[in-house]
Amino acid sequence: MTQIDKNRVLIFDTTLRDGEQSPGATMTHDEKLEIAEMLDDMGVDIIEAGFPIASDGDFEAVSDIAKQAKTAVICGLARANYKDIDRCWEAVRHARRPRIHTFIGTSPLHRDIPKLTKDEMAERIHDTVTHARNLCDNVQWSPMDATRTEWDYLCRVVEIAIRAGATTINIPDTVGYTAPVESADLIRRLIETVPGADEVVFATHCHNDLGMATANALAAVAGGARQIECTINGLGERAGNTALEEVVMALKVRHDIMPWHTNIDTTKIMAISRRVSTVSGFPVQFNKAIVGKNAFAHESGIHQDGMLKNAQTFEIMRPEDVGLKETSLVMGKHSGRAALRAKLKDLGYDLADNQLNDVFVRFKALADRKKEVFDEDLIALMRSQEDADERLQVKFLRVICGTEAPQSADITLTIDGKDHQMTAQGDGPVDATFRAINALFPHHARLQLYQVHAVTEGTDAQATVSVRLEEDGRIVTGQSADTDTVVASAKAYVNALNNLLVRRTKADPDADVKQVSYRDAG
Ligand code: KIV
Ligand code: ZN
Image 1 (cartoon, rainbow, N blue to C red):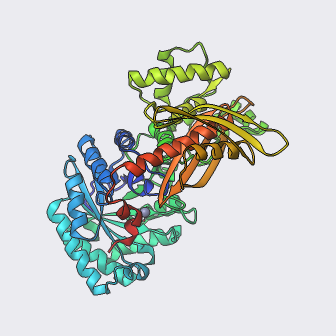
Image 2 (cartoon, protein in one colour; image 1 turned 180 degrees about the vertical axis):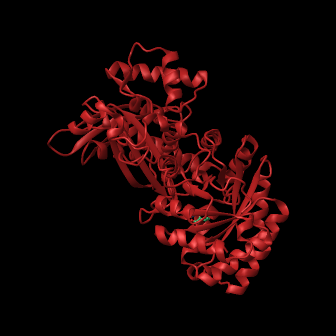
Image 3 (cartoon, rainbow, N blue to C red; image 1 turned 90 degrees about the vertical axis):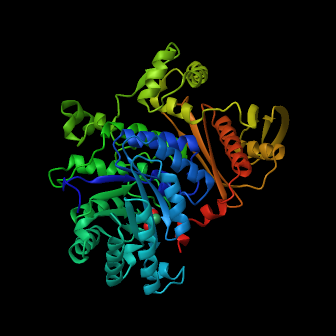
């Protein structure tokens, strides 16, 4: 392989492509740019910024990320056809260091989709990789569903891609089927068997369907892979992808048995984890390794006693290694603007003055209602950032509830600047509230998810509410936080409806391509 430092593992982040592809995780253009900048700053080697042919929105995001990138290689995804590859090149060519990533499903099941024989597919791989290489000197090729592709055929197509000029060969475990021993063995045998394998970088791309993505990726590195494909918080379709924070910290903490290293500044992990969770609408599970709320919490008496005597008793890494600052009580109603700005910066939010003014007003209102404002409260506040330009807004809400059904909700919504009032009854206060909103703003979107979390402890804790709606295959999420669960629910629902309106009206001529997704590669 061409790398000089044989122990260096390249980190390829695909949060903005494979991660964003997971239903409901759609990010806006500005959010994608912001996440890309954070990835670049933390030392990610390659950023897969999107799938340019999927829609004009994807194309613009990839090309703007390519223009803003400082050090990272910017990569776009393309199926195995000239149109995809040309469009991809158009988007990434603005980058200082562009890469085209082209792929095709090579397993029997995937070969069946474009109805290609083995020979026809081999020819297609040769032609498309050659075409990509004529445009760009950095080309990655992936045999999708590699772990279920026949061994002989896999060797054959990998060799063809290398001969046609691919510089990175990625071996995806598309359906999360492999296991660590097999993952290491597959890469090792490919490197030993395929002519020219030592001239390229081998990459591993694992999905987490059996909960083995991190272990499989690390095993692949032991087998000779020198690029790990991963996402922040393990975001991705179904059970997600390998989590960046897990592989990076595993390599750092267990360097004694895994002598490979990355370029990641691990102190930036927490900030980007929170930001990705916010913009994608996917909460991080409390006990998630490295970035979960409880990952560094020690509650039991024995643990706390041990921790006070020596932190290493129960901690294999320090919270500050992943950018977790001493939390607990930080802000109150006497805290000023400068303190809020500094605190939010620590939490990963860099605000312009006008944004800060708006947040400050809302922070004061929260601090008036809630004695103690914790980091989690501020994150919830940022998540539920209200946008004055939103077409629908909750102006007033009162619910009547008690042990006797039905409950009722009286709501005033401002719709396009005009107030509308409605009272509705329902099975519980949230049901009544949603019915009242539906009566004022009829739609046929289906409620797919309604989720409530308490942000901190205590009866004055804020509730964060996530709502997911589906309309004609379009999936949108809404979030809000409030010390009143029903108010948070109403605002989250209205936020989702606003996002639906944006999706409905936004010109997205190729939306169908995106929904069909890359799995239809042909
Ligand atoms: O999981 C997968 O196979 C992919 C490919 C496009 C690399 O995401
Ligand atoms: Zn994938």
